[in-house]
Image (cartoon, rainbow, N blue to C red):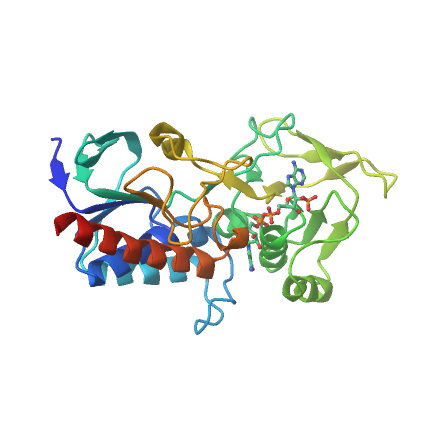
Length: 311
Ligand code: NDP
C-alpha cells in the first residue's frame, strides 16, 4: 500500500550528517522525515572510530547505532527505502520511494554521502562477493588464518589492514605510491603489526580466480614477483560523492561532483541544503565530526528559513 506523508523537512541520508540534522531539526521543533537505506550510513562499516570526541574506541557499527537511536529519541521518523524520484513544486518537494511511499516537505537536506570507488580491473566485478570485498568490517571474519590484500594508501585502507591483521594469517597492503598518506595514528599501528607487509609503488592490474579469488596480478616496480597468491582482496580506495539527486534538482556541483554549499549548507536551489561527505563544505575534511557539524548547521538554517516563510 502506498502512503503519502507530509512534513516540514525531508532529510535524505541516514548517516551522521542526516541523522544529526534530524536531531537538531526536531529540537528546533521542525517536523522531519529521514530517508535512506543504510541505518547509520557508511560509518557502520568502519572497524574503529577513535577520533570522535568523547567517544573512545568504538566500532563504526556501534557509533552508527547510537546516532540512529539518538535521532529516534527526538522523534525522527526514519524510513529505510531507496529514493526513486524527486520533484520540486511551488510548495516544496515530493520524494517518491522504492516502496511507493510519497513524502512531501517544504525544505530538503541532501546528506547522501558517497559511493565506494572500484578499481575497474579485470576480475573485480566477477569475483565480488567471492573474495573481492569493499568492507573489511563486514567480511573480514571469513578470512581467519587466510591471506588477504588491502588496496589503497589512506585512512580506510590502513584501518582495514589493521582490522584484518587481527583475523588473517597475512595481510598485504598494496599502495600505488611510495609513502602511505594515512594519519600518523594509523602508520604507528601498521608498523607494530608483524602480519602486515606493505608493498609500495604497485597497482593491482587483475584479480584472478575460477569462482573464487585465487591470486592477483600487479605491475609492481619493487618486487620481482608480479603475482600474489591469496584468498581475499579488500578494495579501500576511497569514494566519490553520490549526488544524482542533486543533479536532478539542478544543484550546483564542483568539478569533482561535490555539492557546492554556502556557510550554512544552503545550495543555489531555494529550499535545498546539503551536508556531509557529498558537499564541498568543511574544507572537504571528510570526517564524522564535520558531517555532524554540517548537519547541525543546515538544520538551524532551515529552522530560520521555515520560520520566516510562516511569518
Ligand atoms: P581517500 O580518498 O582518502 O584515499 C583513497 C586511497 O586510495 C588513496 O591512497 C588513493 O591513492 C588510493 N586510490 C584511489 N584510487 C585508486 C585506484 N584506482 N587504484 C589504486 N589506489 C587508488 O579515501 P579513504 O576512504 O581512505 O578516506 C576517505 C575520507 O575519510 C578521508 O578524508 C579520510 O581521512 C576519512 N577517513 C578517516 C578515518 C580516520 O580514521 N580518521 C578512517 C577512514 C576514512 P593516492 O594516495 O595515490 O591518491
